[in-house]
Each structure stands twice: as structure tokens, then as C-alpha cells.
Image (cartoon, rainbow, N blue to C red):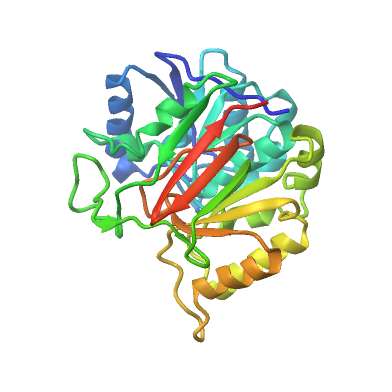
Amino acid sequence: MITYPYLKKGATIGVTAPSSGVPSPLHDVLKLACSRMEQRGFRTDIGETTWTQDKAKSAPALTRADEFNGMMTDSGIDIIIPPWGGELLIETLEHINFENLTNKWVLGYSDISALLLAITLKTGIATAHGTNLVDLRGEFIDKTTAMWESVLTLNSGESILQYSSEKYQKEWQHANPSPCVFHLTEQTVWKTIGHYPVKIEGRLLGGCIDIIRHLIGTPFGDVANFRNQHINGESVIWYLENCELSTTDLRRSLVQMKLAGWFENCSGLMFGRSEANKPVDNYTVEDVYQDLAVELGIPIIYDIDCGHLPPQITFINGAYSEVEVSDGKGTVLQYFRS
């Protein structure tokens, strides 16, 4: 079964950096994010790893894992939100005390998605793939991003509906601050292979494919055991986003996932928008999706609100979901079903 944490009013946010910390020149960005959260009624407890960054990580792997483990068992901390992603979270996984994890939300994306997926696969505790902390530093929050709080305050047994965004951000403009952080300029269009309306349902699993592919063949990526132990063999909807992979590397990664059995009893796949999806020798990302659709015989939805071209829908690993796409618009209905 799946266990769902609950975000209470006035919750304390544990801010720790299991991947990258915040270098000194950007400390004000983190301080602003924490200040905004406190203005919205939260409290913050900031770990030491959050303030440091060297050699592509916030701290040595054991130090990062110890701080995360401590926050997960600290009854005074209600939710963990890292400042952002990074590169080397995978180093920490062998030091995470999965058997002692308490039922509290962990929210993030990018490199953090390895931790999110590993927690859900190993323990059956739901995790939240969505915004990171520094992107909540704006004076205002767009309505797609703002749903993170509504989703995480849902009670077990309840459901919540999210809609595709109206517009998305094509590029980061750090030198041109926005009251909403994001510069939402491009029209959002959810697409499907075959260009026909799609409705799929199943348990959600996913993350940044650059990162979660490295869980294959490890104790942290045992999807088959998760199916048997936690969801009684129900079908899975995979949501994936590509940060930096070429189309050919994306294709290799998807084939590897298929050969590892990750797509068995899969009812559909969803892919986020990506700036990395450049053709290689005339092999486009649409070709990748088309090949996958033919091989697996399932619907493929793409350019959804997930990943490094925000805003993002908050996807809950382990939740039961019904996803519908028609005329460029999409809805994601999530049930907190055990």
C-alpha cells in the first residue's frame, strides 16, 4: 500500500541540500525564499549543508545523508524541501536510512528525483515531484506552481485536480527578476503521438530521466518489488523529463528502462518540455516518442508541465491518477488511494 504524508498548517520546512548547496554569492536568494515561506505561514529550519557548495556537491555524501536522515526523524520538521537539484545526489542513497524514514513529504525535482523515486519504491511512502524552494521566492506564485500546497495538504482518501498551464517559461532570465520568478511567455500545448485525445490511468512514478535511469539495477530502483509489495500489480503511468540528454541518449535510456522491466504493465508515458530535445542526425524527439509508442503499444503524451521549463504540475509518486489530454489541454486528477 501507499502511505501519504500530510502537510499541516504552519508546518516547519526542513531545508537541506542532499545534492547541491547554495554558494555564497546566492545566499540572499535562499534567504529570500525562506522569508517568503515564513510570510506564507510556514517556519523554516535550515541545515548546514544548504549554505555550502564545492566540487559539485554541498558536502561529502555521508554528511549530506546524515543531515537528511536527521531531518526525517526530527519530529519538529514536517516537510523537507531542498533549495534545488544538482548533480551527485546518487552518492547519498547508500547512506539513507530508508527503514527509519518517517511519514513526511519530500518535495523537489531534477537531481532530487532520484531520492524521491527511491523513497517511494523502497518504502511505499508517497513523494512529491514539483517546485524547488528557491523558485518559491517570488512575491507572487503562478497558479500551476501554487498547487503544490493544495496537493500536499490533501487527506488520504481524497483527490485533487490540476490543469495544464496557460503559458510556460522558455528561458531563465536571472538578470531580469520577475515578481513571479518565472517569465511565462510561451503558449503551453500538451501533445500526443497520433494527435488524438488520450485518457490514461494508473499509479504515478517518474522524475528526471537523466537521473533516475541510474537507479536501474540497484537496490533503489526495484520497480518489480514495488509493484508487488505496494500497489498490488496495478498499472503505472510514468512521467519523465529530460534535462540534458541528446535525443539518442534519451532513446538509449528509454530502451534500458524497457529492458529492465520498468515499463511492464504501463498504461502510458508522459514527457515534460525540454530544451535538450535537439535532433541528432535527423532523429527528433518525436521520433523517439513514436518508436516508444509502437514498441510498447501505449499512449505517449508530451510537452507536459514537468521539469526544467516551468511551471510544473505537482506529481505524487505512488498516487493513483487519471490523465486526460484533448485539444492541447490536459488535466491530472490524483487520488490519495492506499
